[in-house]
Picture (cartoon, helix red, strand yellow):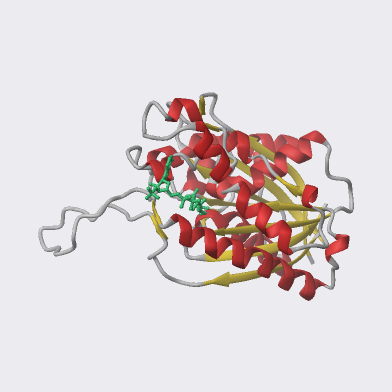
Length: 318
Ligand code: COA
């Protein structure tokens, strides 16, 4: 017993910031950003927090599933840019949507949504919970250093999620973690303990872009192939690939290595949203679901990578 996706939902803030807008804030230009990343716009929060966006995405997912908040047995949330460390994101979403079920977070950076699905599948397989809401939400704009042109142009804000119930459509997952913080990290404040001898931190996204790029282009196709081997699915049988939307060139590089999956099967919306971290995969899933792109029975590979470092590939049947 695994799960079936009942419905999807998403929310992005209204403000759309273009590459030209960013060129007025840092020394950059549309040509550089578009050619290196494929990003043209991102949605940026003005007065909404990650939990407020998450609640809106959750309500949209419930509506799409034909459920109300009272029908939920568990809420799982993921964020790297939440409003607070305590209470966790899932508790705030529980309150804001009017649910009464248990609620807890997982922290997995940009791969987090796939860790949520893996956790949901495990809970459902034990019979512990039946209907689980999984939401990734990010207000990346609050953890970016807006004077650092190498990172602030890459990310966007938004939230998205799915509701799952018992079913047979989660077919497998392959997880790899290479622990370390040299390549990608978001330090927290060091605090003001009079006893601490720790150096003050820079509590923003710190990233070695080229190392992240190398990690992703190497591990994403590798994890996808491991997943396909494990589940006995040929590349030619894959209907769609929903990759973490961090960089168009990373997705295109993965497509070149997986020659049996046509490039047009690798779906993208990075142009409009940039990298929304934990919200990236469900945002694209929701967009495609609402467009009616996915047909019942389609085999969809989900692939994510991010801080940890981690790389996760999962196979679902729509
Ligand atoms: N605008 C203009 N120039 C910029 C810039 C910007 N926004 N950001 C960096 N540069 C400059 C750098 O200062 C550097 O200049 P220098 O060579 O004079 O020192 C140069 O551009 C670096 O260019 P290049 O090496 O060609 O960049 P790149 O092709 O490696 O692209 C990234 C940089 C960040 C787009 C790319 O490495 C990347 O996408 N990495 C992965 C990031 C990612 O996926 N993160 C999320 C993980 S979940």
